[in-house]
Length: 171
Picture 1: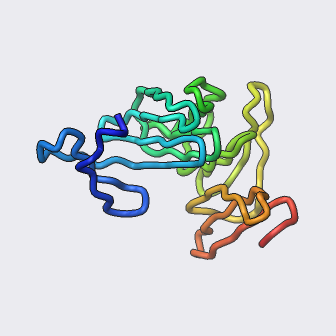
Picture 2: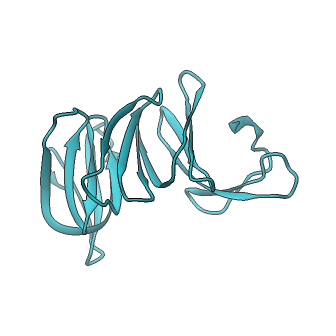
């Protein structure tokens, strides 16, 4: 599937216009990529992922609106604002239908979600607790790895301030 995108044209950092068979018919797709996964949310609201180390494809059918990829983990928000997360093989790790999510940031051990601009985090264990997080209101969040391979979480708060924090506090 990914090898056939010879007629693709990038129109931003994460959106790509795809003409998969060069017939002039294009569709937009949202792409998220890590060192281990390349995932596409297509116009049909399905997610197609390629495990880059195994060159294995998997399809996640559903009505998804957004996704996030970090290392070997993937989470997506569906049209009902519910979260589903999978590993690098497409096996579901967790599903959360308790809250209506605005945004998610996936991590190797779990994910953080925004509900009414407030962030909480949950591990990928079926019986794990939901942890409230920082006393800030956010509009967007994302996990990154710094130059020392330390995982940090960054977000844009509702005042448009960019904040990052990790195991050593704020950056």
